[in-house]
Length: 316
Image 1 (spheres, rainbow, N blue to C red):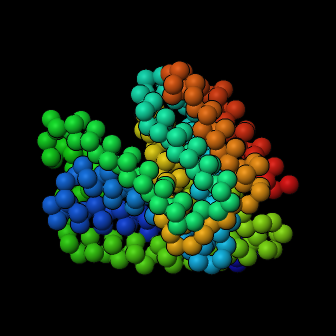
Image 2 (cartoon, one colour; image 1 turned 120 degrees about the vertical axis):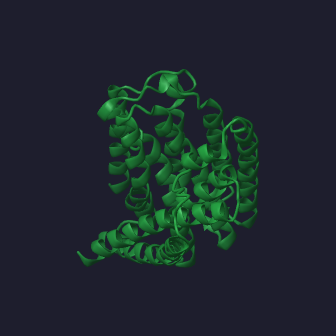
């Protein structure tokens, strides 16, 4: 029982520390005169992925690389099937009105690149450089487009749109948020990895399966909360954009950086099942993104049931 409590504590610390780091970094950057547009495309994007990144790095350092890869692949699968499936099940999502086609195609391309590199047998330093190079191209393209889009917006409006921004935040609070984030992230990651590995040993399952299920589901909770709220607010574009952006960052940034720290071997199970489930889940969005169909409650049932079935297959 203690090991489960410590795992949950580690996850909670990670999520809270990640949120604190984003708030502190965003407001520090704004105070130092960094444009809100650049802050949004870099600090917020990387900051919200900080828990997953710390988990993957800690897993490699702790000689549990299966958790690192399982976390990314499992999170991407959960993001589509569960994080979009649950809000669709509750409220339905009017995805017909969303135009996320370009981002979605980039996400699919990132998925194909990721799978191709996985078939080399391991993510090594050169794989990491390729993934991070692709990420740099994506961020550069986004920056050019966003700058053109925001050309007519006042700076104050950009700041208001920025996640975690508070122009009135005092310096002591900025420093406190940064301290919580920088101390809490490695502490939470260490707690989570150590105890998740112990759970794997207790129940006789692999660390990879723990990464694909328990840890992936835990790190997808913030995305799930965001999409459920977006569903109730009839903001389908927020829900869809959140999932597509998160998946792209998971593939390119997290494994890209982690593989520079240490090699991430790819087991046969990933090559025969998990990577293809991840790609299949991503392709399941074709009707809702490219064909502009609505993600109805019926489709919510299908996606959520598919995720439950996948987890049951992993645990058996």
